[in-house]
Amino acid sequence: MPLPFGLGTVEILLLILIAIILFGPKKIPELARSIGQAIREFKKSTKELEEEKKVNKEELTEVLSELAKEVESKKESESS
Image 1: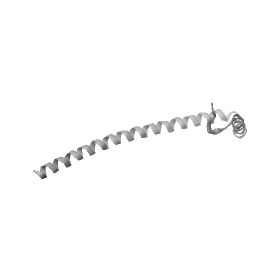
Image 2: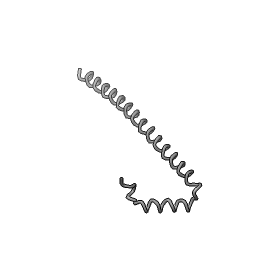
Image 3: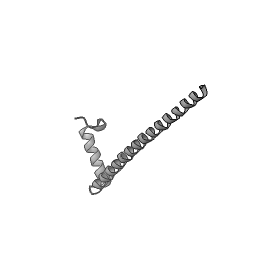
Image 4: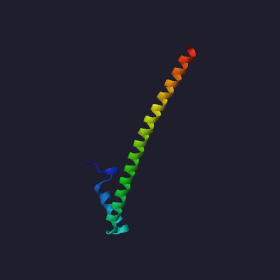
């Protein structure tokens, strides 16, 4: 299984060691939780935006369909 971003095992361990040195072993779980919450919130917001986009697209399609019907009926009434 390839590791993310093309990093090898040594690079991952080095990054973990640097993180422990910078933040301390007690702070790492707190940082991981914060990152996890941020990722969940981002995914939730993205999903909400996609759903809103879908609803707006459906509404726009409906309005355009009604407008096309009105234009067609006016053309028919003008040609009569």
